[in-house]
Amino acid sequence: MKKIHIIWALVIAFVICTSLFVISRLNALVSLDETCKANWSQVLNQYQRRSDLIPNLVATVKGYATHEQDTLTQVIEARAKATQTTLSPDMLSDDKAMAAFMQNQGALSSALSRLMVVVEKYPELKANENFMALQSQLEGTENRIAIARKDYIDSVRVFNTLIRKIPTKWVVAIFSDMEKKATFDIEESKKVVPVVDFSK
Image 1 (cartoon, rainbow, N blue to C red):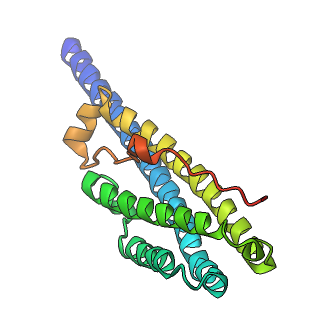
Image 2 (cartoon, rainbow, N blue to C red; image 1 turned 180 degrees about the vertical axis):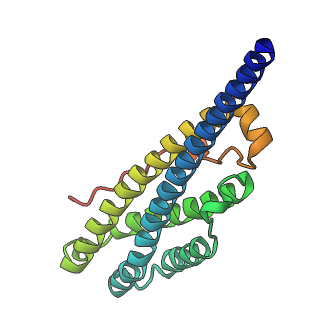
């Protein structure tokens, strides 16, 4: 009789320990998932900040560089396309959606770079206080975007590493529908940031 009690006690202890392990793994993944979503929201927030600055920047440049209409139009169109492509935190496992989002944001960055090159031709514009304030805000926003992206990339790395490790991989396969998250994948040619010198 005592042997049966010991066996049952061992079985119950095993079930309790396994349940606690599964719960702790799932809770860790939920926490990391929420961190990824929060960091992604911050990325979107910074992209929106940049997008909000563009109309004022374009209007200021337009006053000085009226015959640079093509460049101004490209910036406006790129902004429109970038704001139309959204990527909610629930879509972070969709590599194609992330690629489309990043392509549109990259096109906007490229159009802004061309606009800054055009500005070099207009010394009186570079001296304009309104333009200088907008340009400074844009630079700060680009820095915030870089930091927000780094934070998102770091949180996704931690999440994706944990979700792929054994035994967490087995726990996810049995008890959860969580998937690996997409991260930024920038082509080498787009990693080069154009240099714009406003000091001349």
